[in-house]
Length: 211
Image (cartoon, rainbow, N blue to C red; front, side):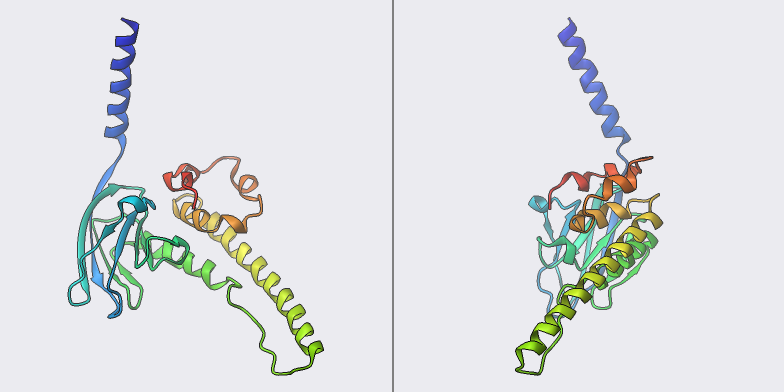
C-alpha cells in the first residue's frame, strides 16, 4: 500500500512540474550570409538534438516550442558556443534576425544578451600580439615581455567587464549564458560573487552542462 501511494505521489509531483514549466511557441526568421550553408538551432546547448534549419535564397524560418527561460543558439557549428553567431531568448513569439549585420528585432532581451556577449568577447586578449620588425634578439625579448604585460591587463579588463555584465543583469538569465561560456575567467570568484543571496540564474539548466 505504501509503495502504491509513493508511486501515485511521484506521478502527481511529476505532473505538477510539467504543468509548471512554462512553454513558449516561438517563430524565428531572418537572413543569412551568402557563404552560410548550414545553420544549427540548439536549445540550452543540447547539441545531441541540434536542429538543422533549412535555408533558401539566404533566408530561413523555423517555429519551435521551448521553455520560457531557454537559450536558443543559432550557429554554423554545433561546438564552441563561446564563439556563437547569435543566442536568443524567447521573450516574444516572433523574433527576426539578420545574421549578416547581427540585428535582432522583436526581442529586447535577446538584443541585451548579445550586446553583453559582444562586450565580453571584444575585450578578450585572444589573438593579440606585438609585431617585431627587427632581427635583434633583445628587441624580440622586449616585445614578448611587453606583450605578456598587455595581455594580462586586457584579461583583467575582460574579467571586470564580465563581472559588470553579471551584476547589471543579476535579475535575469543573461549571466547564466555568460558564465557558461567564460568559466575560466572567474578564478574561483563566482561563488563569492553570488552566494548571498543566490540569484535565480544560478539554477539555470545550462549551468549543469560541462562545456
